[in-house]
Length: 196
Image (cartoon, rainbow, N blue to C red):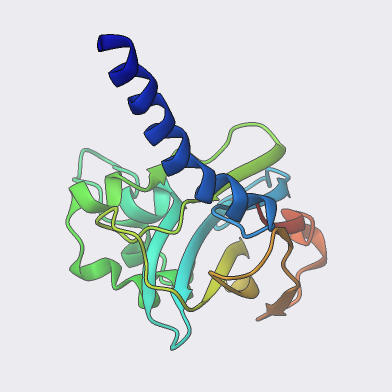
């Protein structure tokens, strides 16, 4: 009798997993991966970036990553550090506005903040279709955004739109540059967003 219960339990588990496997075989994505090539720049006023998700209406959903200077600033002369975007308002300003950074606690920002890379190379960020509280987002259309402060007020934003029902594959990205800067243009290149 005990063996039958084990067999029934195993069969039940397989039946629960099969729909998810079948759905995955249809190609429906369940994660989003964002990558780009980061080239560290010399001097102040650069090397800041943020990656986040918005809904169809342009409302903030979740930050995947933001550089630490943006949210923590830097202490100078024994003074307490102020958030970087306060000291330098040109520091990823679209993310600051969209995420309502000024309303977030240090703990909330710490959860999505990471050190600015000291070395150049590929940066990778993943979204699992959840919001800031870790809850699954509703079915619908979303936007992924990557904003990079190239130098002072030279800012570039990459945007891609997709839906939760899309199949796995690349998302087309557009870019907007506030102010060209030839010297720092290669800070963030080869930006890709892929549903997996």
